[in-house]
Length: 363
Image (tube, rainbow, N blue to C red; front, top):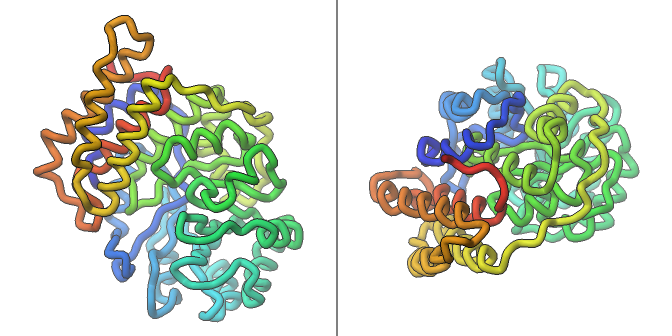
């Protein structure tokens, strides 16, 4: 899936050996976005890093009952099923039915399924999650407004439910940063290392969960991003192990979150020459996610890598150049099967490396 083989050396350089549990993966073939993933494709992606995962349906315009049944029926080690529900489709009854059938958690997508977090029809869903101490993964992507006080009200009303804001809590990270709430978690299913670094540096490490967002990314790319940003933020081995799998596994098993200590508390300062490089690479990633060529952004990124031999981060610039070389060599021969431009993950990996100096690189 995507260019995992070409990104693999950067993941392997980190030397992470902790068991992986991916809290955010999808399957389905009817999503209007054009993204799709079969169970076989999901299992192949997970096998690239020997990961277990929670899986739930992609968007199903005709409702989720059949899709939930398919996920529950197919889920077996290393995958556990979460059900996806929407208020307009008898969400409470569907959640209860799925949990009784074996679902281990719930997914809500306020954007695709067009509802608000304070929709009265969700009270029964949240009440079930509260009663059974279930994880509830909530889409918190860039196309919706911050949840703000609505989120706080839900968290306080259902304190035994475990709410996981997806995509590094993009909607609400600005006000959540440094102010965690007991039953609130976030996952790392997002491409921007700046957001991941802020989350990992300012949230307690026991509250952050590795998520890849398959098929919008891969388990390997997501694990690489979570681990590299966690190391850059200053997390130790035990804390990184929690982020990569231990924290999510405890939620799926309906256990309390681990106490892995406080957040590191500060985001490391980035060298201005690396900041220049990162800005151009991030702009290139954004273009590829629209299906466009990164164009001049890659030329500018290459110019940024012409630092003097004695620069303390010279190895980072050289590593970025290697990823850009791989992109230019291999992208013409790659396919994504969706709107992303081929090789997007190589440029995203280059942006990640540029944003996290001091973390281990391939030899």
